[in-house]
Image (cartoon, rainbow, N blue to C red; front, top):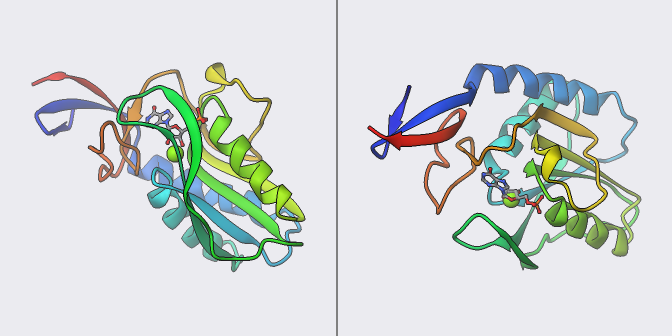
Length: 180
Ligand code: IMP
Ligand code: MG
């Protein structure tokens, strides 16, 4: 088991498994007839997934524009709170096909809020791609269009995802186990 910051990390999804899945997801996206697609990466947790997914999209023959929005619903801890836009996109989304990209779909509050925001601004369509779907935790009635992996209800880290700002740099997704 990898040891990082003195903690053992159990690997749930390896770097190679994620890379393979990203290419499949990109092909699924390419199979839809989106017009002039705008990818909106929901920061911070999605930054690595979005970076890999858009390059897989290139390999699948899609040339999206890319934007970033930062939404806060979680403090330093691990429970849901109020939702705010901390940093907005720069683009006009009116009449455009939007693909929201996030790390995890859990309660659905973050992506539901972001989806409604894009629709209220006149987006033509809003689709959702997530690396992980924690379906058992859903509160909002929301489904992702593209899901990397159905994730068990563990608190996961790595591949952009953190616990109290740590472990984002891991090239895999894992669960923090006890001290070494
Ligand atoms: P929700 O769908 O609004 O409940 O929140 C999803 C967001 O919570 C994700 O975009 C992550 O930023 C964060 N999150 C949820 N579960 C985890 C986890 O297991 N590890 C790290 N971040 C998580
Ligand atoms: Mg997030």
